[in-house]
Length: 459
Ligand SMILES: [Zn+2]
Image (tube, helix red, strand yellow):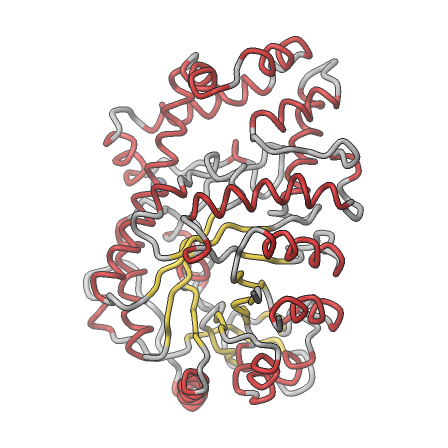
């Protein structure tokens, strides 16, 4: 059975105007495309950025902007129906007059693709919107709390608007929200720096029976626990804290710890559930896919995949395995072990690794310790660590029919997965019965990576 990607394309999504792009996918047996983000590049916009982005070396990306890199602004792909957003504090941008022709061209490209038999997904633009909107940086400060009900309202209406403008769209991919998961001081995803505490956060905490201060108290108690890891404490943890009740005991030793975890789970669930249910209410045919980190990291980020399965159509855990940069599992494992050793005088690297492996319930091969993880992984990493996480994410998502994991090579200056590593990763997915994944992202594919993807998609 073939293992096929949903091929994600990011700006310049003008790549979709190129018939050769669709021919190439069809020839490779690939019949699904995800548009991430649904944004057209505006030469006259006021927040210009370089496109294609430096790592996006696919020739079609360069061709889509005229053969030379440009400094343009990602802007709206269609004119919004203002009535939908009535009463919401967030509003999408208007489509400038000079972009109307391009918007029509995009609608035709998507219509043609669906007529050719392609299934088209799009990302919600909430994330883009949160990081400053489509060129509208002035809104940024007001748009940072995931507990604001207007944000969910905006996401639902945006889905309706997108569906009305692009009737061929089959599904919407929701990315995040995630609570942070790193502990290395100063890291982008340092969980101890995460703080909002606005009235919306306060309301969610109170709905659980405590105040937002209690959430921070629990988070700080977690840090204290991590800073009390002597070799003896680790050996005690490994010998005496396993099992359902053993680990529950660990959390309840300081009940603020458990309250912190409950808060995060409640925040993520209420946001994602309201979005999924709202989209389904207006658009019963629309598929909604929700995203999450690896099973080992998901609870810390607030995601309970089995509960999410009650209201999503697909789960998309992130099979992000690179080191360095951000968001890759090998980088996270290295950061955790390094930081635990830094924080605890005398703690051996071996014990820091053993604690991490036990706490996150993930095997780390004897021949590939975190100190080695900036270099190419041996087969044991794929057959032990990667296989373990794929098995758990497939089970948590509810089986292959509901499973569409993200597969990517890199993020923001990280090391890249090699073609051989990608082949072994896809091999594990195939061996466990996965049928599809979403490849992030077409724009950066080089020929040796394309060869690996098509080895699996053409079967
Ligand atoms: Zn808040």
